[in-house]
Length: 359
Image (cartoon, rainbow, N blue to C red):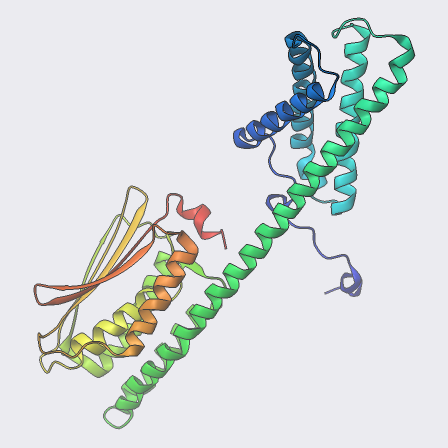
C-alpha cells in the first residue's frame, strides 16, 4: 500500500447509500408530488381569505409548484451519481442551489409570459425573493429528512449485521467441538482415518471462513455440509445412509452460512448415533415460485428422549437468522410423523443474485 493512501480521505459510500433517494422512482415521485400539493394548499390558505375561493389561483399555483418539483427531481436524479462522490454538506448545498435556481428560472418564465396574470413591477423583486426563500427552506427541510432517514437505515443495517454475526458465532464452537469429538473417537481405532478427518476439518473451516459475510451461495453451503458428512462417515461407517433430493435449486441461491450443517448434525446425533442399525438421513431441497424450502429428516423411536437444550439453541439461532435476513415470511418448523423427525425451513428469495449481495 502506498504511504499517501494512509492519509487519504475515507472512501465515499456507494451510490445506493447516498442520502438523497432515487427521485426518478415512482414511489419517490408520488411522495414529492403529494408534498408539493400540500405546500400549495399552505401557500393559498396563507393569503387573505376572500368570500369566494379562487380555484383558478389554486390551479395556477399548483401547476407552478409541480413544474418546479418535477424539474428538480429530474435534474437531481441525473446528478445523483456525481453528488454521491461529494461530501454530504457539499452535496446538500448543491441540491439546495439547484432547487432555488430552478424555482427562480420558473418564476422568470412565468413572469415573462404572464402565465399567472400581469404582475405589478413594484413587487417583482419581492416575488423572486419570496420564491427563492420558500424553495430554499423547503428543500433544506426535505434534504434534512432524507439525511436522517439514511442514517437511521444505516444504523438499522449495522445492528442487523451485528446480530447475525453474533448468532452465527454461537454455532461455530458447537460445530467445532462435535467434530473434534468425532475425530477423537477415530484416533485409537484408525489413526489414518483420524488424520484424514483432521484434513477434512481443516478444509471445511477454510471453506467456511474464506468468504466473510452472513450469506453464501447454496453450492458452497452444500459443499460445507458434505465435508462435515465425510468426517462423520469415518465414525459411523455403514450405519449412516444419505438420500439427497434437490429440485431446481440455483447454485447461487443465498442461504445463511452454517444452516444445513447444524441440521445434519442434529439428525446424526439424535437419529443415527443412538441406533445400532443406524438409519437414513434424507435431505430435500426445492426452489419454487421464489420460495426456497429445505427439509432434513431422520428416523426416531417413540421411546426416544426429547432433544437436549443444545439442539434447541442451534435451531433457535437458525430461526433468528432467517427472520433477520428474510423477514417474517421465513420460518423453521419441527415435526414428527411416520416414524421420522422432520426439521424444515423456508424463506422467500425472489432474486437470488441480488439477495446474496444485500449484506
